Length: 126
Image 1 (cartoon, rainbow, N blue to C red):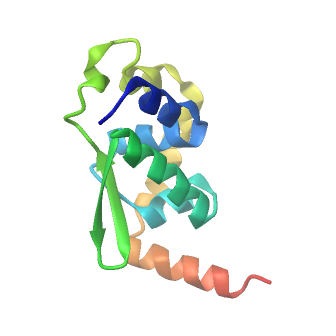
Image 2 (image 1 turned 180 degrees about the horizontal axis):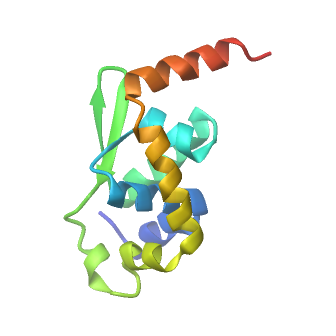
């Protein structure tokens, strides 16, 4: 059950708000795309996504080893207040709108290719 404290906790972090904005713009994003776009470790991205899923704002589905996320469009809290609706906050945040343009470079690459690049980058580290 989504409560206001879960909703506000989920949106209180800038990266989680960025993810919600990205998911409002995209039908669905793979965990690898979110990780790449945020520029954080996979574990950090996973923690953020866990909070968003627990809040009820985001739904997840597994596809083999990979997790895909989408906005829970049926959540009543998104429509309960015009001022609190994340879509309105996104429109008012110019920095976030510029950030969302960068998402296109990540989503242009198929998740399979993106995962391959991430594995190769990780193997050359240290």
